[in-house]
Length: 552
Image 1 (tube, helix red, strand yellow):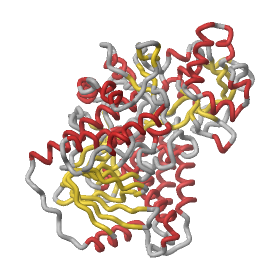
Image 2 (spheres, rainbow, N blue to C red; image 1 turned 60 degrees about the vertical axis):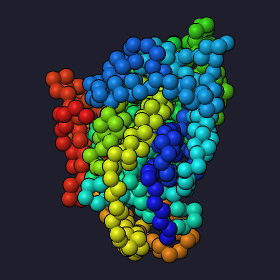
Image 3 (tube, rainbow, N blue to C red; image 1 turned 90 degrees about the vertical axis):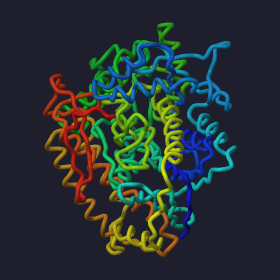
């Protein structure tokens, strides 16, 4: 067991965590960045690398329209106001956008009214590498990778550190810090295999925040990319693309060729995903029937051919080639699609500075809620991560300068870790965290997926509670290093249970269909009442209620 002390602890090394750490280090603060994945991996690494720009007056309108009035207008305003020179900054560090001559190429992903999105030359991996190399130039940063943050420590409603477990070295850490930045991304693995997320996306940020006293907002709003690979099983969930991936003349059809939906590029991800789900479900919450994307009309039109080139250059068609063959890859025949979990638009409740209700805890990126409301525009994730990552890094540094030193509570480190272990497992029993995680994902996909009802949500909560009970009866020998993977998955399972409950209770409160949230028993949007749903942990129970105040 080891202990460290830093000014700032940053949890997560995706785009938000890297930008936050760079910004804080530039303010001459001592930073520790902890990553569950290898350093700078995560969803940033596998993203398409398309990044929105704020170069016209209508981006805010598009964001708010997509969010169906659930966005925090204050957070949207902050995002746009603080985005100045963000692209020039990353380019000065070595990032490259595709150009036509001297001008950056701009495309128009789903939901945008204008072409305002830049294309990274080598997708998200290039952006991650550039940010990684920039951070490594700083001498006041310690990097601890392949380490999961298990619990954020608080005293008198203020953070003071975190319990961490290195699942490669089988080593426990307690990292003390005056400010903590939470940037651990989303939770697509709650729906495995129906997600394009990395396996590390197990909803840690939401669970960590709830456990230390912060609130969540609008956790029922989970975005599905409409076109994911349906089969074979080993490729299920891989992203094909959003509405733009249909080309200007693509359409959705049934197995026997009947038209389901046309004019796809003009629609949002939410609208197309819902249409696919309803066609597949036949009035239930279970997706049964086969739906196909028919892009064949594009190959006879010049703009359709150009759309194929753009889609192919983005890398989206590679999955189609391996799953369905060359003809589907060339848009010469239809192929099966199914929506795949892409992004959690709800998240930790923050103000315009990225601060939470817990003193010293800041949040950025997909971990934070409020920006996107009930619908996220394509290419906004990396844009938001860059802008708010930079902002919260600066704010965290400023908070250290403004406040007096808060002495860390004196407590035996071994005692803190042993107390935590007792909350995870009793060390007895024969249940497997791997199988319980698989069961949890099956429950979430079937009953808390694209189509929900009160009955399905209550059934899901009952099943999640059973999984939670079984999870406390896992055989975990904390002293055996060969159980490192089992320990990691046991810790993740606890996080997944808490986050799943948050999604379920939030979905029960929202008795309407809005954006990415569709209730078969409440199929219409309630235009007479706009509200957010706030989730808290009270006396060990995850609870939700309507939240009518603005996020500020």
